[in-house]
Image (cartoon, rainbow, N blue to C red; front, side):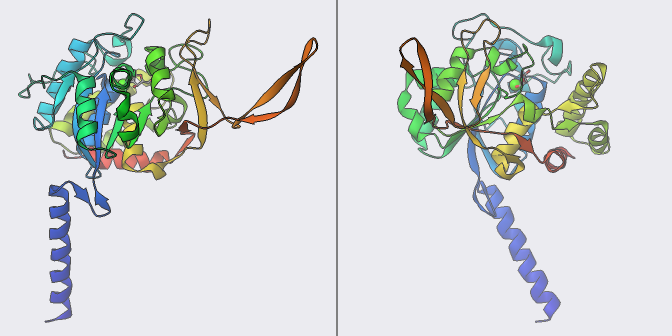
Length: 354
Ligand code: BDR
Ligand code: CA
C-alpha cells in the first residue's frame, strides 16, 4: 500500500471513529458532559441554549424553565419553539416554578424584547412539553445518573433550590453546578445585585450553601465577553435556521448595547455554557460566597471572600481585639478572568451555518 493510501485510510478511520463518538454522545476526550440547562429564555439564554445544543462536548439531557426574564408561561413557550427550531424534540423540556420563593417576579422585557426573544417570532413548536415538574425532573435525572449530571442554571435559582429543598440527597450526586449569576464587582439590577440572584436571593443562598461544587460565572466576567459587530458579520455570512435566529437575536442585543454606549453585547448565559464546554476559558479561584438576603442596599449581592479568612475578634472588657485570622472554606469557584476572544470565536464557530 502506498504511503498516501495508508495515510488516507488511517485518516478515514479516524473520521469514522469521530463520527461514531459524536453519535454515541462522546468526544475525542471521553463521554460528553451530561447537562441540564435551567433557563429563563431570554435572549442570551437563547444563545446559551443553541451553543449547548451545537457542542459535541455536551449532552443536553433536559431543559427546565424558570421565570425570570419572562413569565414561566412565556419562557416555556420560548424554550419549546427554540427546541423545535433546532430539531431537538427528543430532549425533554419541563416547566418549573411559577414565581420566586418569597418575592414577586420581576420580568425583563425591557432588555429582552416583548416576547423575551428579541422580538423574533419563531414558528409554533412541534415539540411537546414534558409532563414532569422541572425540579422533579432534575431530581429524577440526578438519581438516574449519579455523579454524572452537571446543572447549568442561567436564570434565577428557584428551580434548583426547590429541587434541593425537596430532595437534599441529590446534592452529593450532582457532578457540579455551573451557574450564571452574581458578581464580585457590583450589579446590574441594583448597585450591588446581579439580576439572576436579585430575582430570587433566598433560592440563590440555598444553592450556594448546599455543599456541591459550584462555578460562579458572574456579571463582571460576562461583561468581558462582548459580542461585537465583527462577530455578527460572521454570522450574517452563513445561513441555517439556528444561525439566522441567533443572528437576529444578536443584532437586537448589539443595537441595544450601542444605545447604552457599549461596543457589544455581554454573553452572560452563553459563557456559563462555554465554561461547561471548556473550563480552561476562565480563571476561577475558590472563594466563600454568601448571598445577602436582608441588606437595605445589598439584597441579592453575592458577597465573596477573596482572601479566604476573616478576623477573629475576641471580647476583652468593653471592646473586641483582633487575635488572629479564621479560615473560611470556599464553596464556589468564582470566575474572574476569561479568554474572551477564544470564547467568542468558539461561540460563532458552533452557530455558523446551523
Ligand atoms: C442575567 O440576567 C438575565 O437578564 C440574563 O439572561 C442573564 O441570565 C444577567 O444578569
Ligand atoms: Ca438568563
